[in-house]
Image (tube, rainbow, N blue to C red; front, side, top):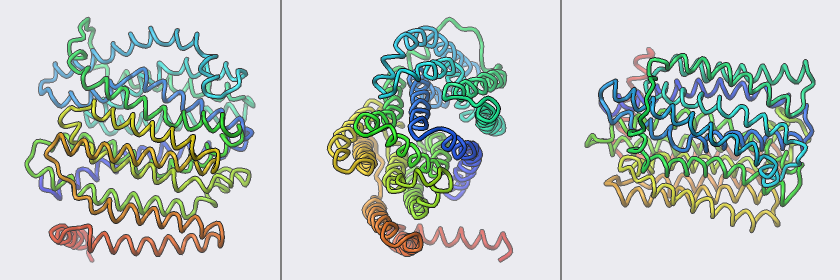
Length: 489
């Protein structure tokens, strides 16, 4: 495909996955205002941290197999070899579940202590352990549907599970006046049903196999990825655990509510990430891949920064609307957390050299350094700045991780990045966000929206005149003219 054709393909896949993610997150948005009002601030903080622990447990049990299957699936051309690879990965998950879950059950009380949660929530924790096998299998199915471009089935599973889980949660609240444990039990039922549907969908890819030869070949790739995925999931756990230990349980609830607002940016980020890696790998061997990667990077940086500023400008009214006035103090942490996600999304592009060269061990080093930077900043900033300090520590860790990833990827590959967008757009966004927070606190929503409008004009102007090359501007003009002509303008 031409450069324009590639971008259209990437945009189409992002739109498909973005729609699925948007509808799925909409289901969470429906339940969030109800659950956050139904539970106390402290109980909601516990519910939130248990949800994140469930996500961490799922990723830990998978430990990089999803990334390995997605990467090596494209290494083989014939169907039977791909089927063998998928079957081996599937049965390996079953073996790991059989070994790991009984141990996790025995250590449940100690895990709660490390998370800063009272032992009275142990029954709720056990519900997460029961749900884990179904989430592992469902996650396996979703990844396979994505790499085989089975978009309709992917959408049904993603959207269907999210809405069914939301309905189960609301049923538990309204009909059974459920506790945290009861709400999690309702989610267990939804995951059991949809994991069964998912396995039925992919049954043709599965066959009995005693071998693990393809899994062993992938170990050098999957083990670092497993550690990376675990670190990604454990950082939110560390955030919340340290908030509970260093501050108060109510502060944990406030932090959880503020962080929940960032899921709106997550719709955009997840859509892009889901489409980006298969797309990037599919063109990685072509001589003109570099120009495509750089143009995608510039577009992503600009769109991410504008979306961060847009959501930050209305953070306070969003929190009041979704969670009530008792959570309004969480508005101040929204911008740093959103900016951390934006910086992380940039690294998904700049790290592609490590993925193409299968140097995931170096990627693990970057994630370890980013996590250490976050933890150190957390202990330094939290005592003085409380929740704001936590959010700034998250942003600092994300910046360290992205910088290290970008530098390492550049050294091991021939990819050269145009860093103009880093130097101009990102710092200006941080400055604009800081001004916006001040304006909102001192003068209210109108001042915040005015700051956002001014920042948008400046960023768009600089992006067009400075960040984009003359050739890219010409291509953008031509694409815009074709689009308007096709619409009859």
